[in-house]
Length: 502
Image 1 (cartoon, rainbow, N blue to C red):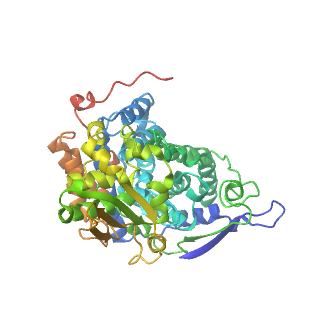
Image 2: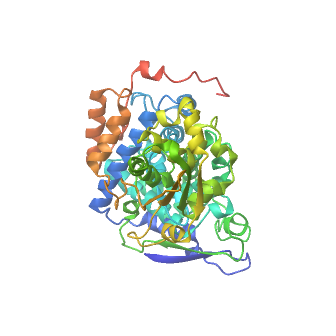
Image 3: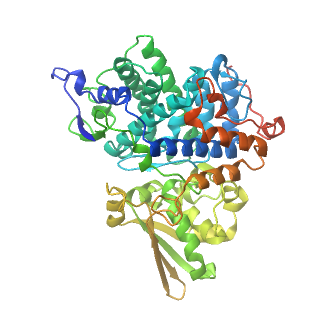
């Protein structure tokens, strides 16, 4: 990997395009290096993973709304929309939008955490939509997705957004644009302009994940994917982007990130170096914010030792700075203790999540968030006994570049009313590659079958899984097989969506 130092440059300063971060990203995207077998294998896993969580979310209101919008934009050849027959094609940017919301709604797909955090599987809907529309092959799709994952992971390793209250999808617009560029075999100049436009149109504040969290939490990455498709389209027509987009005197670093004196180091593959970043990422066993994954498993492990939960006086979760301030009491969000809070807010409250996991010994993508579950008096009582605190060692491990040391867990200190103290800790979730039960293809397939149960009929599940497993072999024009259809009765379970502008 080659380290690229990225900082603000004065307009009068000599700064050749070859040194722009966007240009270096474009060079990675145009490098026709072969995709390693393990990278291709993991891409298939994540295509299955995305479809699984989309199936589980298909009849939720935000997903139904996005789908209704997309279906108002039929197009030929176009791209598919989850739930509808492959013959119901829409314009690719709208397919990216609808499918992106379906994938993101339950906060249940893959993750990568470093200087910033991300859900790299958000690259799949826009890149797949363009691949379907453009009649590309499965091998083309895999090349594009390898680039999308590589660029997002590398940006996440090098540039922290949240410390400046910028939402993490600011890394997704450029990565998806680069991935689409690889998919379509575009030149470096076109990808450079598309990356710049995609970044410029997808920088927004973190309020989408703060306070009263709304459906925009799921919409934000879908919007970034949609903007990436549109950015590539404009760049292919010869339209340019503000430049240098990251390093300019009035650019992203100077005014939205660390300021004129800030310096970032972004690692990118060198010429001829394989794109393997997807192998650094990990999916979720539980439908909850990633820093909650290990605490859920920890709670399930500790509950037998505790016995009667009414005996608990207090619980303190010692964890990383990021977990403490984003989903813990360090956020200072009263909504994180509100029994009437939205699902999106509860998903970002490790105090709520730890309490329910202790009580139930499981985590379920619907039951664990149900209003009647959140409002149970005994849950509220236990929930409000839980707090978080930053532990410098957990913060250090969170940011470690050593995969064997990197951790997103916590140490739970549970004090009983009689003074007894029960302590346990867990560094990584059970499903993590270094966890007790790492996810392999078998677990991805089981996740799909579990989440698709009652939504996608058995024959259609089998058809989709067979097609997904053969992604690399799918010929040009066969990528419409990488979706699933459900019955009209299932779609009818979604809430009625009011008419909008179109």
